[in-house]
Image 1 (cartoon, rainbow, N blue to C red):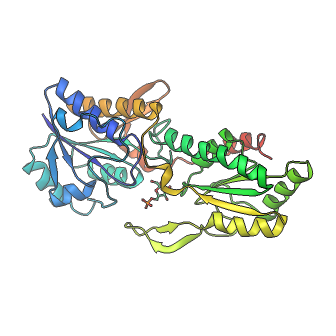
Image 2 (image 1 turned 180 degrees about the vertical axis):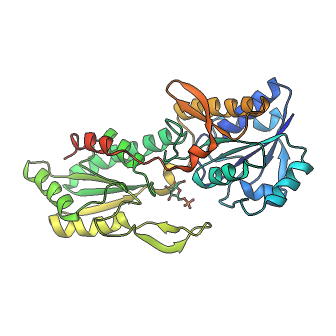
Image 3 (image 1 turned 30 degrees about the vertical axis):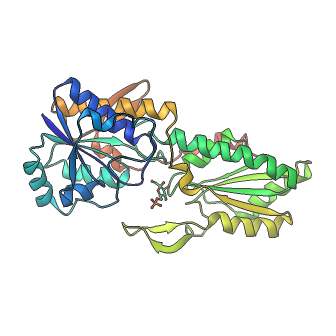
Length: 335
Ligand code: F6P
């Protein structure tokens, strides 16, 4: 059998581990894999390459994706997708992606045999306990927070750390907890800037002369909208950014303490994946190929407890936000 693979959306540590796992599993079962470049873009443009085992040698620790990625969608181009399936004699397609890529995969799966693999550093896809890439991003953000602690302490400053997370605050929550942040601000729970400043001041009055505030890029002040850069991304969403700088100014004014901001940005997505993410991505890639080989489509490889299982692709279209209870629990460790 012959299967295609795409990696779409924002890149994510572990993508190459998925590609490698799919190719290795295919080899074991006598299947061929063809990789389309730049996500759905390669399917639309007919830009693809065969992926024999030699093509994936040495890619496991490499960040990014050897196939390239884009946020283009094939949703409105069923005729071209059908043409590509025929041209490439595909028995199925493995779509590795986040909300956008899997949204299209789910919609197209009524006509085409597609298996999904959920990826994103944001961990905001439902149907799976974790997405690969998240663990790596949390490690990177935590390491940054550890470093910022010592300089904040030496200068008696507030340090604001802006992390990724458009709609979901998973990275902020986990890196904030792991890094011992004093305040964690997430999109799920709009904040009151006066309360944040009070919290910082209360800590100072207890003799702790510095504070670490972790904020997700999509967090908003109560009654406000997410701050953005005034430009759109390729799928027409506003490019988020600015909440960290806004907090820097507000906190300096309100607490009368020097405040600095660090925006971690794409540092969280680049570079090699943690061992956890490499293993999770490999297991998901293998499961996705085995599903395709067995003719099971319209589903996604997902982590469920200790196992990798198949769940309906439709589950990927529901955002996975941080539940209230987890945010409440985290409150105990802040300040
Ligand atoms: O993939 C999700 C994400 O990491 C979001 O948290 C962030 O808003 C977005 O990607 C930014 O991606 P890009 O800069 O590639 O458009």
